[in-house]
Length: 249
Image (cartoon, rainbow, N blue to C red):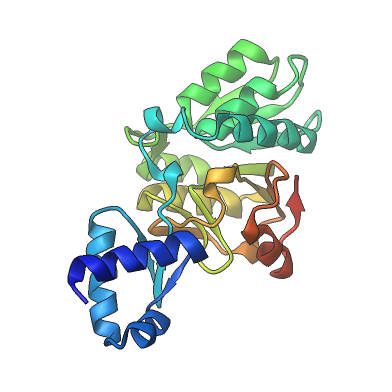
């Protein structure tokens, strides 16, 4: 089998099964696992798969630059936002993450909301100022152009003094095996730190994030209070529930 044929086969398996297991494909094709792993590495270098231990998963569409993500799964994000609104109660201190789903949630919150909302996203902060009466705290730090959220040492220092009731977390991948992942290593570290300073963490999981993975782990599934999705029965939701994840949708 030619290299191009092998890679086309691996991409077809990924599209059909939602994952590629290197050992299984090596056996099916009568090849060494090293050959399959090299093919997966090359496909990952081209941005076509996300390599994980033992194989590969779909690349998260949500890992694209912010401007591209504004056009992805917009209806799903709005449904997630409407469901997540019910988690926010008057008087709470809430950390609302950055990202397009978080921005949809900022627009969905009631205008009369009396709460303190902390965010690492200038875009989310402006949306909250325009649409709610909430007290808004904008974290400082280096603005990452890809995600348009702040990070780095200044953000870490600010996060260390936080004490929040609720963290509404944005990630780019939600997978039963890979856990909760994102595309930037510093962003992953900031998210972990915020979760550690929050009483409860819920993940905002629009449809394009389910079953996908990105390079950097944020949290394991057991570290969150629940997952807010739009209620569509994506194939991985059953696996997530079986893993003990509370799914709100």
